[in-house]
Image (cartoon, rainbow, N blue to C red; front, side, top):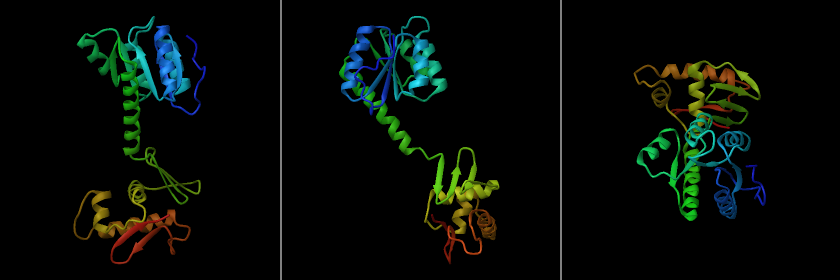
Length: 238
């Protein structure tokens, strides 16, 4: 089945339907569009996987019984490539089948026949959960003034120029960047960044701060970002 784009709402999130029953695809497409979603559809697993790569859908509605590659294999392959939510449609009610579809990575399932109203509610719930998880997840990249920190790759640049930060230097500036303008004592930094507390170790923080200033400040003798708060500790400001 060709990609279904008639009457598409361009601003909506894309829902990919992988289903070989034309009447069901038409009914789902109509109702999803009424909710403001864009719709793409495929009648078999191979085409569905291809559309998943090109369309980058927000959610996939996947029939378990497909010609050629079955829905279990399609689900497994989708999950190996993406974290996209997957809602399985199945004509089977056997509990074992339900367990299998969840074990291979599906997020939810519905047994045919089902209420379109309930399906739309489940679609909304899955998309809402994804948004909540995304908002709760820590960022992979931090930006502070001209300082750019890639937390996943543990790379730092300043004004586009790569900074050669040692591991603890990166940990320290990343921690401070997660809490801009917040003052942390030496003891707090030792606990949060180094993971230990003991007398006399505050000098460790001072040494690391001096080294960091050499790399993140234009004039280390007159810092404007990594600041000392007399009697309290250090903070990082834009």
